[in-house]
Figure 1 (cartoon, rainbow, N blue to C red):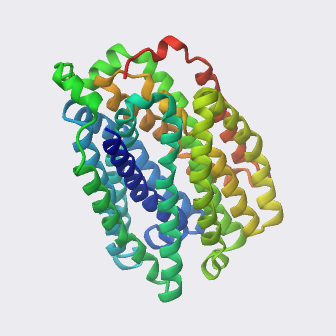
Figure 2: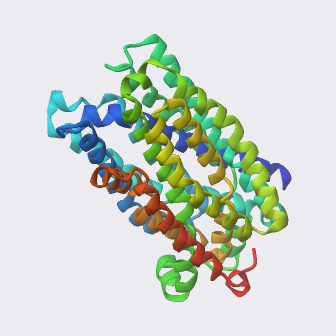
Length: 423
């Protein structure tokens, strides 16, 4: 049993490594990708177009949650997770081979959109990795926060790998011209490794028990919407903080390069150095905050760190625009990324809101509807607010505060009877 649980944890971490490697690549290379594949008049409009494309991928994610939620609840968590990881990582590697806008015109943009739509559909089922892990740890519920925090190692290793490979490519290639494409080829390798790790594991005990009892739903999504509306609405709203916090850091990473200059980013390793430090501190904080959540309560810890984020987001923007110091901005991003780890245990609460026969669908659909409404478009909305109200340099922070306030109200509405399902 414990060996199987350890392997499930490693598999979940490997899946997160692959997905976060891809995510950080797009984040850190957003300025270059927007220049290569978009066609606007200025850099901010280019970035806005790219975030619009990413937002389109976010909008499609709920449809992926419908598809893979059905697969995960009816045919098994394992097959759903394998398929989603492959459909995320293989298209990502194709970015390395798509010609730029100057070579094939609008076709280049269309191909990038196709890649993001494919990934968006697949990402609709990516949250299955947390369900997969939690159900494998069903007999260790009192320490779920700690184990959930250990999944943070996946994010950190993905970030670290991304930073290291970018550094290598900067030192050994003409990075600005073509070297930026090389890191994307590694996405396929990471995807195949994580898929193999899941393939060698059995199904989760909770799903197997449900299958033996013939308690599988023919149409899990319909049952979810029909019988678990309150749980679904609560899950959508309490997922806002993580999505918005990550989207805000994406916005800060992108805007930092323009506040200081893209040239500074290209000729220095400040961003990569801070990313490496962040990748070391984040899993430590994830486990620490997870253990604290096990003792104090997951909702209480989430509320604490949501409030801290609300307090910091406007001052961080004001400082960034006032000092225009790249190191100071990236250190601020590091602090916000670590604070965001304190919000993550709320994901366990989301899983607890749904019974086994619709849990994969419930977690996937709620997280991805929330992401479509907030996370995917947060960088785009923040860019739009920044360009529309340039005289108020902290205006984007007010949008973040509003989103987090909505989630605080939702978390306060969770009652003990909302989490009365057995594992």
